[in-house]
Image 1 (tube, one colour):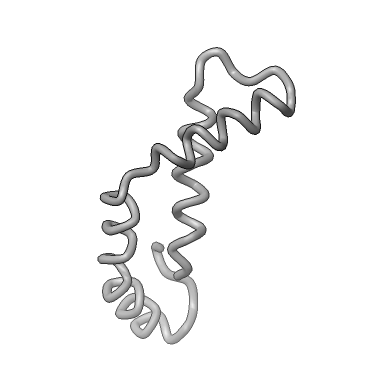
Image 2 (cartoon, rainbow, N blue to C red):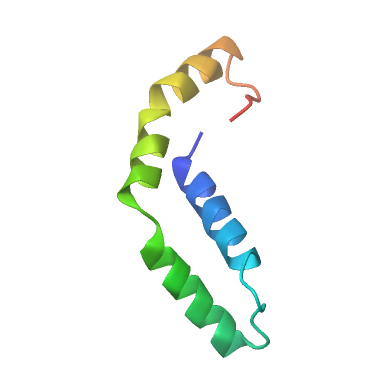
Length: 68
């Protein structure tokens, strides 16, 4: 239910899409930082807007697993 997990996943996909891939920790950090700052407000807004649906799914699942 925590939207930050989906934000981390978004960042992971952006980093994995880099060509060429970072070849050391310094390059990786630079790419992570660059992609983090590129995450648009629209991505965060979309995740935030999904909260009511997430809560409803959680209630429906009686606190169990959901598709989120």
